[in-house]
Image (cartoon, rainbow, N blue to C red):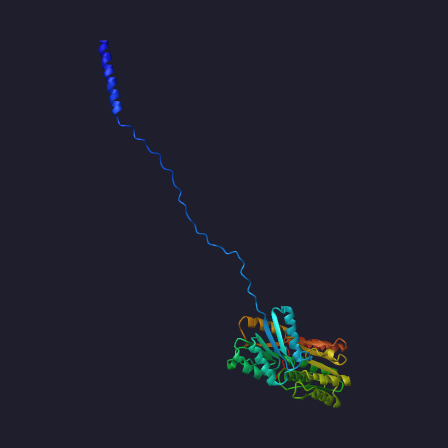
Length: 360
């Protein structure tokens, strides 16, 4: 019996081995492939770090046409000195200046004005109201060149000309003060005025002077003599001598030719009042004061305006309020206290608009 069981067990074990050997082999599970990271390409904007070459600013160019010399101690020098001050402040590399002087004859001045414009100057200034016709004829041919002249108020815009500046001065204010003070100083009750041409600020100055003498109400009279010339020094000297012989003991005068009248006043030791420029150094013994013009603020504004692309159409006025005018007294001549007090009071009244002078 045991032998039979052993044989059955052996048979079963052999069958099991056979079945096991015939079974298919187990399939191997492949390992997962490693994840591949995607590369994202980002385009970065290129930044230029090099410093661009600086743009060189061209100097502003001004040409000045003067009827007399740049050292005439009068109207021409007032503008010339102002231009030199502005150039010194800006620097010669920023402001270029050219000028022509002693151009009393209008054709010569007109030729200089056109020549400067043709050379490409940014601003051409003709220092004299007599140059208005030359400016009017030249300006339309150079629309991007600015022109200026004075003392006058006509920019010719009503004629379609848009590149002309004009400048003037309330010269009548200083004239009024001079007239009033002259009346206080005169012992002979006679005051004289030697004028050049009866126009512009010379005319308004005398109007103010005569009004000042009248308002002083001291029984003083004043009268004018017009020589008809800005340059005739001899005519001015003759004018002064005429007044002195008639008994006048206080004089005033305008233009560069006033040096003739000043010489006569000095010779006869009588008071003189200057106009447009500080004339005191010419005869400190007799020149009491001068109404002084300061064109610096006007020039600065013109330059700024032209740089902004506006070439004209503006009128500038020198006043005591804006610093364009100053009454400068001679410190070496001692005046009565009431005279100086009255002068200061009159200036303040004008600044407040309390005194009006009709110019018609």
